[in-house]
Length: 386
Ligand SMILES: Cc1ncc(COP(=O)(O)O)c(C=O)c1O
Image (tube, rainbow, N blue to C red; front, top):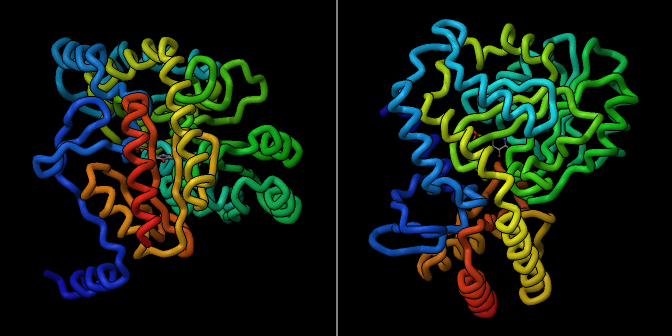
C-alpha cells in the first residue's frame, strides 16, 4: 500500500473516527439481520417504509422488463425515454412548479447544479449545516462563499448587506429539514431576504419530502407562490427508491439541461428506478396516516430524551438526535444499543461539531410502540449506569 495511505488511516483510527461498512441483510419491516441477529433499524432514511413495498418492487421489475436494465448513455446522447418525461411532469405537479429535471442522485444534483448557477464572479450564502454535497458544489463553482449561522436569518441578512453588492449573481442555499439536527429552516424569512437582496434561492428538501406537507410534498407547499429558483428533492429517502430532481421554472430546466454537468455527462438513471420513482409519487398521497405516526413517535422520543434522560435533543421532525458531548460515550452508547438489538449510527466530527457528537435516531413508519419502548428502556439503562 502507498505509505501515506496507511499513515492517514492510522490518524483516522487514533482519532476514533474510522468509518466502516457493516454487512447487513433485510429482516422484515424496520429490522436488519447482522451476524444472524435481528436488530431494530433506527439508522435508515426509509421514513415511510416504502423501499420494500410490493408496488415499488413490481414497478421496478416491469421497468426493467419493458425498457432494459440500463439507460445506455446520457439523455442528451441516446435520447430520452417517455418514462423520464412522465416522472418529470409528475414531480413538477407534486412540487407545484412549471418543470422538473431528473438527476442521478442528491449528491450529483447539489454538487453539479451549484456550479451551473454561479461561478467565480458570484457569491453564495449557505447555512453552516448544509450537506456535504452542497458544500462540494459551492467549492467546485469557484464562487466566493459565506456560511451563515445555522437557521439564523439575522446573520444571513448581515452577510447579504455587507457582501451581496460586490458580486454579479448571488445564491442562497438552505435545506428545509436538516439531516443531523432534525430542525426546520425559517423558510419565509429567508425567502423575504432573497427578494430584498436580489438573490436566487436553492432549497434542498431531501429529508422533508414524504413526511411534511399535506401530500407529502415537503415543507415548501405545492401551493406556495413565492417558490425558490430551484428545489432539490431525492427519491432515495422517504420515497423508497433512488435518484433526485430539481423542481424549477421551464427556463431554468432548459438552462440546466445545457449547463449542469451532472446531467450532461452522466448516464441517465435506469428505467427500473424511474418506474419505481413514479410509483412512489403515486403512493405518497395515501400515506398521511404513516406521516402522522412517524412524527408522533419522534415527538414522544424527543420528550423522553429531555424529560426522562435529561439530555439534549433538537428539531421537530422524524430525525431525533441524542446530542452528547463526549465521543467515547457516544461510541459506547452505539455499541451498547447494538449489543442489545438496536441498530443506530453515531454521528461524529467532522459531520457534526467536535463538541456535539450524537446518536441520530431515524424514526420510520415501520417502527412499533414496542420498538420505541425497547429503545427507551435501553437508553435509561445505559445512562443510569454511567
Ligand atoms: C440534505 C441532503 N441532500 C442530499 C443528499 C444526497 O442525496 P443522495 O443520497 O440521493 O445522493 C443527502 C444524503 O444524505 C442529504 O442528506
